[in-house]
Image 1: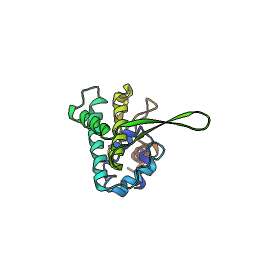
Image 2 (image 1 turned 90 degrees about the vertical axis):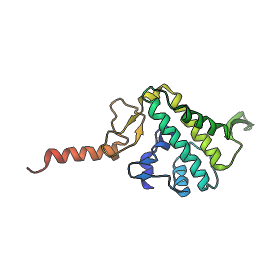
Image 3 (image 1 turned 60 degrees about the vertical axis):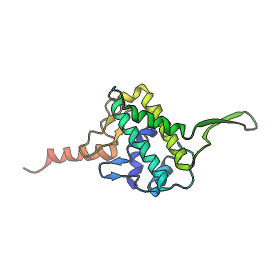
Image 4 (image 1 turned 30 degrees about the vertical axis):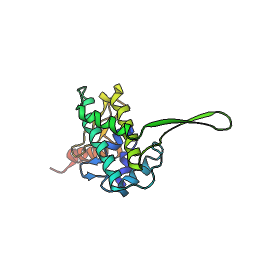
Length: 184
């Protein structure tokens, strides 16, 4: 799972979709999911112990997100079944904003009170997908231009071409350099 470090930092829904790589599924086991969640700890609440059923719920959200994203980023209507599945995942663990007093001010903490760990996690991820799909920026989501990469990203700069300059960009540049300088 060392590749995961290079595949984080995009909007949460894109990071989730990017766990399906050209070399395989980075969320194949509950331990893989726990590793990915450690990398996303600043964006997701703690979940507790995760089971194979929890992993399956997250993978379902990932598949629905990927299909809906494939349409939304091109400005076409996503399949209704995918949108409904994402809505259903959110309804399975409704979010609440819990108010408390910090001693100096009222604080508001968003949390999901109902459901098992995987259901709550799937709901957070479905909410992240909903935010991305409804954002006008979704049409700027791109696929990495490296031949052997299937990652998607939201470029901060219009000239960005690769999911990671250090990963795919470097491989492309090295290959180009080799082609220019290879012996005849």
